[in-house]
Length: 119
Image 1 (cartoon, one colour):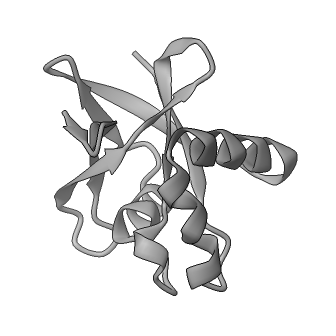
Image 2 (cartoon, helix red, strand yellow):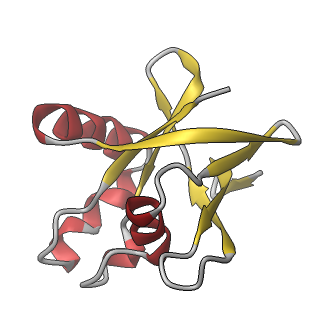
Protein backbone atom coordinates (compact mmCIF):
# COMPACT_ATOMS: atom_id res chain seq x y z
CA UNK A 1 0.00 0.00 0.00
CA UNK A 2 1.14 3.52 -0.78
CA UNK A 3 -0.13 7.07 -0.35
CA UNK A 4 1.53 9.87 -2.30
CA UNK A 5 4.17 7.34 -3.31
CA UNK A 6 5.10 6.52 0.30
CA UNK A 7 4.82 2.94 1.55
CA UNK A 8 2.39 2.32 4.39
CA UNK A 9 2.34 -0.05 7.33
CA UNK A 10 -0.82 -1.35 9.00
CA UNK A 11 -0.12 -1.15 12.73
CA UNK A 12 -2.28 -2.83 15.37
CA UNK A 13 -2.13 -1.73 19.01
CA UNK A 14 -4.25 -2.44 22.06
CA UNK A 15 -6.14 0.58 23.40
CA UNK A 16 -4.61 2.14 26.50
CA UNK A 17 -8.03 2.60 28.08
CA UNK A 18 -10.36 0.31 26.14
CA UNK A 19 -8.13 -2.76 25.93
CA UNK A 20 -9.49 -3.32 22.42
CA UNK A 21 -7.41 -3.86 19.27
CA UNK A 22 -6.96 -0.69 17.22
CA UNK A 23 -5.53 -0.37 13.72
CA UNK A 24 -3.94 2.57 11.94
CA UNK A 25 -2.18 3.00 8.61
CA UNK A 26 1.12 4.83 9.03
CA UNK A 27 3.76 5.98 6.61
CA UNK A 28 6.76 3.72 7.05
CA UNK A 29 10.39 4.47 6.51
CA UNK A 30 13.34 2.11 6.19
CA UNK A 31 15.44 1.37 9.23
CA UNK A 32 18.79 1.08 7.52
CA UNK A 33 19.09 -2.15 5.59
CA UNK A 34 16.89 -4.16 7.96
CA UNK A 35 13.95 -6.01 6.45
CA UNK A 36 12.54 -6.73 9.92
CA UNK A 37 12.28 -3.24 11.38
CA UNK A 38 10.56 -0.06 10.30
CA UNK A 39 10.46 3.57 11.39
CA UNK A 40 7.16 5.41 11.94
CA UNK A 41 6.43 8.90 13.23
CA UNK A 42 3.78 10.35 15.51
CA UNK A 43 3.15 13.57 13.59
CA UNK A 44 -0.64 13.57 14.14
CA UNK A 45 -0.75 16.18 11.40
CA UNK A 46 1.18 18.58 13.63
CA UNK A 47 -1.47 18.58 16.37
CA UNK A 48 -0.64 19.53 19.96
CA UNK A 49 -1.11 15.99 21.28
CA UNK A 50 0.46 12.64 20.50
CA UNK A 51 -1.63 10.29 18.36
CA UNK A 52 -3.66 7.60 20.12
CA UNK A 53 -1.64 4.78 18.57
CA UNK A 54 1.53 6.17 20.18
CA UNK A 55 -0.12 6.31 23.61
CA UNK A 56 -1.42 2.76 23.08
CA UNK A 57 2.12 1.55 22.34
CA UNK A 58 3.47 3.28 25.42
CA UNK A 59 0.84 1.61 27.62
CA UNK A 60 0.95 -1.82 25.96
CA UNK A 61 4.38 -2.20 24.27
CA UNK A 62 4.07 -5.99 24.27
CA UNK A 63 0.83 -5.83 22.24
CA UNK A 64 1.88 -4.27 18.93
CA UNK A 65 1.77 -5.90 15.49
CA UNK A 66 2.35 -4.84 11.90
CA UNK A 67 0.92 -6.36 8.77
CA UNK A 68 3.33 -6.82 5.93
CA UNK A 69 3.18 -9.11 2.93
CA UNK A 70 -0.20 -10.36 4.15
CA UNK A 71 1.22 -11.54 7.49
CA UNK A 72 0.71 -10.12 10.95
CA UNK A 73 4.01 -9.86 12.83
CA UNK A 74 4.51 -8.95 16.49
CA UNK A 75 6.90 -6.03 16.89
CA UNK A 76 8.69 -4.29 19.75
CA UNK A 77 8.30 -0.49 19.68
CA UNK A 78 11.26 1.68 20.67
CA UNK A 79 10.98 5.46 20.87
CA UNK A 80 14.18 6.90 19.49
CA UNK A 81 15.88 9.66 21.47
CA UNK A 82 18.68 12.17 21.13
CA UNK A 83 21.07 11.94 18.21
CA UNK A 84 19.56 8.67 17.00
CA UNK A 85 16.11 10.25 16.80
CA UNK A 86 17.48 13.38 15.12
CA UNK A 87 19.33 11.36 12.47
CA UNK A 88 16.22 9.26 11.77
CA UNK A 89 14.11 12.43 11.49
CA UNK A 90 16.57 13.90 8.97
CA UNK A 91 16.34 10.71 6.87
CA UNK A 92 12.53 10.86 7.04
CA UNK A 93 12.42 14.47 5.86
CA UNK A 94 14.90 13.70 3.06
CA UNK A 95 12.58 10.90 1.84
CA UNK A 96 9.31 12.78 2.48
CA UNK A 97 9.96 16.54 2.55
CA UNK A 98 6.34 17.30 3.54
CA UNK A 99 7.13 15.87 7.01
CA UNK A 100 9.45 18.82 7.56
CA UNK A 101 6.50 21.13 8.20
CA UNK A 102 5.13 19.22 11.22
CA UNK A 103 7.61 20.41 13.89
CA UNK A 104 6.71 24.05 13.16
CA UNK A 105 3.02 23.27 13.71
CA UNK A 106 3.40 21.98 17.29
CA UNK A 107 5.31 22.58 20.51
CA UNK A 108 5.79 18.87 21.19
CA UNK A 109 8.71 16.77 20.03
CA UNK A 110 7.32 14.48 17.36
CA UNK A 111 7.93 10.84 18.29
CA UNK A 112 10.04 8.67 16.02
CA UNK A 113 9.48 4.99 16.72
CA UNK A 114 11.38 1.91 15.55
CA UNK A 115 9.21 -1.20 15.22
CA UNK A 116 11.31 -4.36 15.28
CA UNK A 117 9.94 -7.83 14.53
CA UNK A 118 10.17 -10.17 17.50
CA UNK A 119 9.24 -13.38 15.66
